[in-house]
Image 1: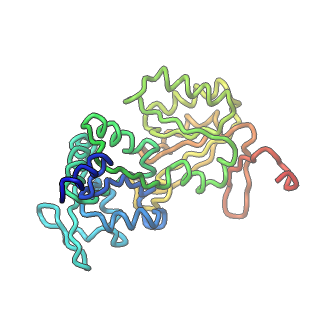
Image 2: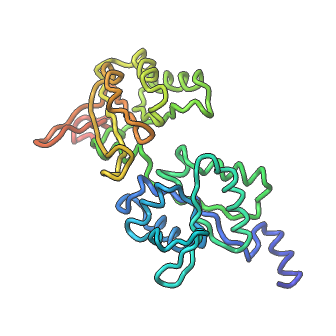
Image 3: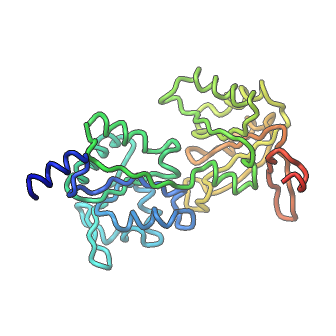
Length: 291
């Protein structure tokens, strides 16, 4: 590379010999609910960083090479001769792997850093950008590939509860104090949002009681597990419809990290056919002529 080209690359902030860091949302992880772009990016990246669970999902339809094709150092050669490095991620290695991803990109490799759901909805996007700032990695191109988040997957499983204004609130107090979470819950309940709760294995009963203070007990609630994962999730895909007044009594339906709660408003209603009950929150007009 000439001196002039090198200087131009430095001025632009992105050297020509760099790859791209893709933060890829794979939704619930199964092929039917992953975008074509997410699949294409994972298949074409020289390095794929993903947890053991997500690697298992991605092997189901050949998005990743089969496990027996990966050698002891994590390298696999696809049927078309393309070589990939498959890196296992865990919660405890996120900072280390972010730094490693920047190094791979600087070596000229495209990196697919896999996130479940959508990477910007309680996923990996913010960490990548924070680490890029801390590591002065402004030379690293970062692209977010969106995925289907649990709020949308769970909503589809129970009908149309999010057709009016809604919000998502994480119950995890790892990053936010409970006082702040409680303030957001109360504000959302008062404001009339349909509320989707994430990380329901933490404080879910307490969250329900706070919303009950501002919303009637007959407001409809859906408890959704592993939306879009069928039997491949940690506990199996399921939906259970109850009311706000009784939601805390069904802790047996809240199975862990794959559980989300959709709390309806006074406008949320049921719609039934011969097979099941759906939830619908109208946009405002209740008559067809209003649409």
